[in-house]
Amino acid sequence: MEPAAARITVPQAARRGEIVEVRVLVRHPMERAIDAPGLTPRPRRIVHTIRATYAGEEVFRMDLSPGIAANPYVAFRTLAVESGDLVIEWIEDGGAVHRQAARLTVS
Amino acid sequence: MTARRARAIVAAALALAAAAPVPAAEIRPSHEFLSPTMQAQQDDPSRHPGWLWVDEGESLWSRTPAPGRNSCAACHGGIDAMRGVATRYPAVAADGSLLNLEGRINRCRTRHQGEPPHPYESSPLLSLAAAIAQRSRGLPMAVAVDGAAAPSFELGRYLYDERQGQLNLSCGQCHDEQVGRRLRGDTISSGLGTGYPAYRLEWNALGSLHRRLRACSIGVRAEPFAAGSAEHLALELYLAFRARGLPVESPGLRR
Image (cartoon, rainbow over all chains, first blue to last red):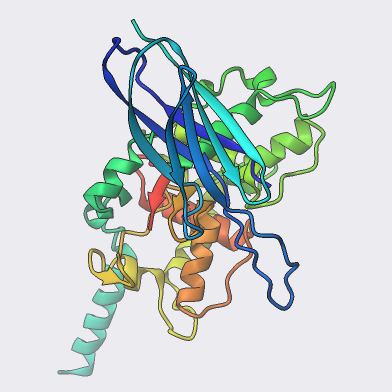
């Protein structure tokens, strides 16, 4: 099984009040519960939610359809308010929550 | 036409065919065949999912495989020391066997780390290969095809030129003669391996050159060679020879 990991790209530094773009690549195979003769049936395992928290608040949430590609790319913008961790969470079928953070430095 | 004249023409044609060099001017780097969007994405690590594997490879590089064993970094230092290495592979090892990057990584693993080899096409092997090849991104390919590599090179050239499969096609009938035309929703490229391991959208994952060659074999309805086989390695060497002077693009982004 692939390691659960994301690549989160934020600007190296931002000024307070600046709009910053956050780019996220999530590594996830999006198991489709293939159940065919000769294959071992596996439960479906697809990410259904990606959310981001920053400065103690949820700043982004996205519901994904089961047709989402493996290793999806998501980008969104938020307002730089204070230095802190931008935490990305992705939640898959079965309830497992994966989490990774990127540091945003605000001056 | 006299028989003598016909013989002369045939002889001249054969001499031309024998002396004909690889048409280097017509071989173009693979990124030129990508759409502008995909070109930009291939060059942008924040949007290129192949970098997820590069990240994994970098962490494997410095991880100790088992207590008391050396990590890659323990012998080689930082992974940036691998700059330029991918331009020289496949290469012949001291014992005479032809190794590509994956083969070299597994040789290191069995000889110096005392670990079993990673299975071909496994995530750790692809990740390490991608992380190492990425250090040569933009550098010109420069494989050796003389000396010990000559027999493999000749086999590779033979496999490239040989018609294969129920469709009875050779590699060059698409990748030399039809370059730039469309096939199954994609543009036919010069058929170089410089972008591999590459993230292929069709696979939704990173994959090796041998996996890509397998897709070509199936496309012409030929029996595919096994991943890591001598045939694939020889073909990989010949493709690397065709790409001499062209930049390494790994991890590439492909349709």
